[in-house]
Amino acid sequence: MAQADIHPTTPAKNIDKIKKLIDTDIKDATIKSDLLKMQVAITGLKIGDAAPEAALVKQDGKAYQLSENKGKPYMLFFYASWNPYISEATIPVLKEVVNFYKSKMNFVFVNVDDTKDQFVKTSNSLLKGIQGVNVYGEKGMESDIAKKYGVYGFKLPCFVIIDKDGKIASRSFVNLGEQELVTILDKLTGLSAPRVDPGMQQPQLQIDPSAQQPAPQPANPQPATTK
Image 1 (tube, rainbow, N blue to C red):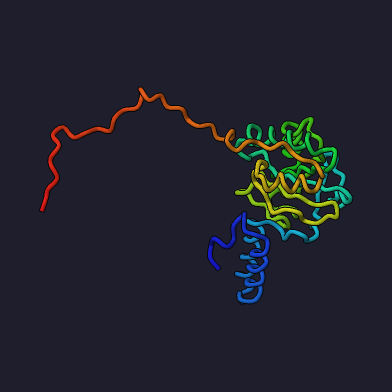
Image 2: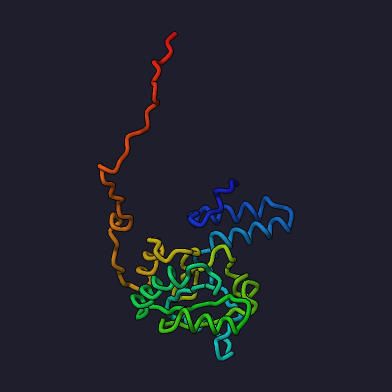
């Protein structure tokens, strides 16, 4: 097993092989546990497995169960107030995704800040007007849900898709714009998101030929030495 074998884009069949290898060949219980946690943190939970329930609360203090979404696919969005650029980069795209798919699926926004007060403040500020359920994992990054879903600071914000039967339907994504994620959402909802022309995503840099400078030449070029 190489370091590259545990990667966010590792195919599901390879993930299963790696898990079996860890289970059968690693004898030290601590090392085995750490490797399995690392695998979940990087690749996410196994697609097709039941989505784990976890302790969650809403702003009013009432408990929330992920199973309340059963019968309809949903997206889990894990975030915290300290995520850099979340308001500028992630939230605008999230709004577009929610507005497009909200008629066919649910959205659950899971805050993992340190305190419930920070959760209330952050969710009210960042997610105001976006359709979805705002919930908090008590103890933040040490919460029940963070541990069960392999959520760590280095992969926030992140997104996990659950199907209508309550089963994991995707690996963990950190970018809402990934085509693989859009394909999964389209499949689960029966909708078809607009496709962006790849050529339009990265505009070509235009350079004025007159501004280009020739490569500098030595003041007194010497002929090459011959043998």
